[in-house]
Length: 66
Image (cartoon, rainbow, N blue to C red; front, top):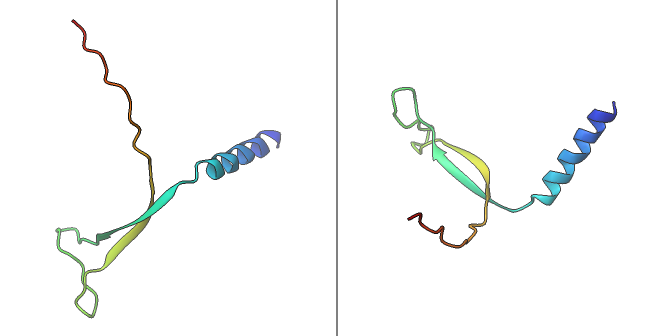
């Protein structure tokens, strides 16, 4: 019981502290043969997901071996 509680608390703490920007990304839905699925109006059906945007870290150049 204590281990389950500890795992839940750590997962909640990590999810709160790892909060960042999210971006909505939509991709056209495809059939098994690669064609775009269209709705009744003739518009392509899209699958959308929320993705986290990570900061790009700038570092120093790695020295080359001689």
